[in-house]
Image 1 (cartoon, protein in one colour):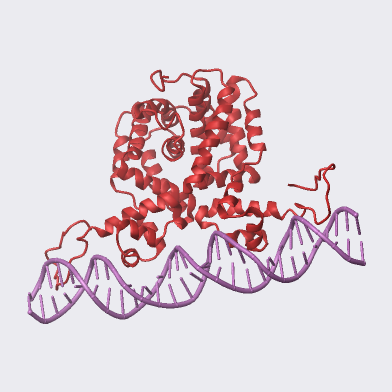
Image 2 (cartoon, chains in turn cyan, brown, red, blue):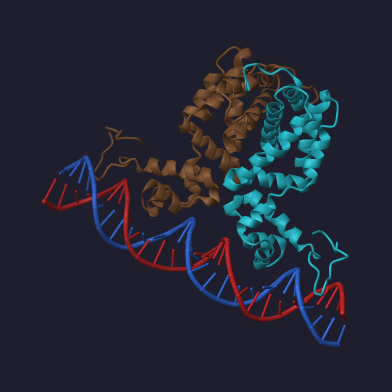
Length: 211
Length: 211
DNA sequence: GACCGATCTCTACAAACGTAGAATTCCACG
DNA sequence: CGTGGAATTCTACGTTTGTAGAGATCGGTC
């Protein structure tokens, strides 16, 4: 997928080796950007190919139909989950700050930030995107965060904290509204961390979400 | 716009009166729904016209280009701002709960909820939408909320509270993730209100957003 | 009943779209 | 050096899109 990496025991009868030029990754990056910027219907094979500097037909050759390309776009870089998981390997009283810093850091990083933006935007535009986002949040992120919490109703707690972060990300990175957009990231973390901490380990109203 | 309402002193030389059949409103409603469901690029004149039961060309006749139709779609029902304004006519210590209840109530109401959903979705898909949403939030909602606050840094406070509500709305109404989606609205209000209250009237870290 | 402006429909066109297959270039291996 | 399979491009088809203008229909006013 990245470079070379040929299986030694496999007979290679000859021919050009796949995945050497990096064009596939360039197409994927361009697709992510276009889907994020213009939505599912707004992004086009021709626009994506132009941004990647290749022929439109090559996009189809690698990824097939537009739906398949879109699905490939939504696959998160594996490091995202890993970094989130590490964020919760800390003392319970530090989780709020660690969660905020890690999540906002993922958005600051151009590589992972573009992927997250693509997911966010397409989740609102495309039904398939909304389903994928829900499955990912429900089955992976929330479950993972919840398993690191000792408190009661861990899934509700994780989700409440996530909603605060999602809202902040909307204001800062998507709509770019002041003063959220130009605050230093340390300031944003300092503002959000106490409330995240409250959601994760503090007291919640009793009557909500009784089993 | 709605019915009749002819100025008495104006000479009406004859001809059919405008705005009688309600078709214009039907087109606008269909456009809102299509833009919300499929994004800016995904919605089409033909699809909107079909849903409204009219000829596609009539949409153009009434609203002009696609951009103009889209802009008309984003005009909020005037009651939205009014209801939000009333929410802050209360004791400072009740603002968190009132804000949460009013804002979530706007999303529960099918009429205003559809418009808000359209704005939300298109703000993420279309640059014009993001600009309009930012202008609305910055110039109207945040300013209005801030003027009702006595505390320091009122705009930052209003925005922080808004981000929490936006995140909650994303989870509950857009992505529809459990358990946020099926909680009673009173439970959601009870969960969010303390943190909103903290943002609106509590202590904020000193070093953030120094003038 | 004749008139007139607003409402609404019919037909059309150029551009861009997703998709498809044939043709060409490139490169590691025998 | 020749060969074969992958990478890449060229060309093209059928459909849908936004936009446009001419014409038909409706319903108050005179």
